[in-house]
Length: 83
Image (tube, rainbow, N blue to C red):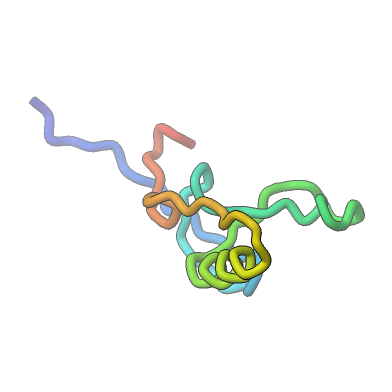
């Protein structure tokens, strides 16, 4: 039995809300497509960091909206086979 494990990939990028860099799983991180509100902006999911998603979800709850889902592996490295 081999003890070799394929490496994980650390995806690093800026938070759409605050601009700080952070590590995330691109398939699981909460994200937002700014073109939904402003068609002049390029379409595409933009990641949101764990600090900002807490604030965003608190505001959503206060407004009577459902919070966005935060998966346990949202801010973890992703297995290289998933890229």
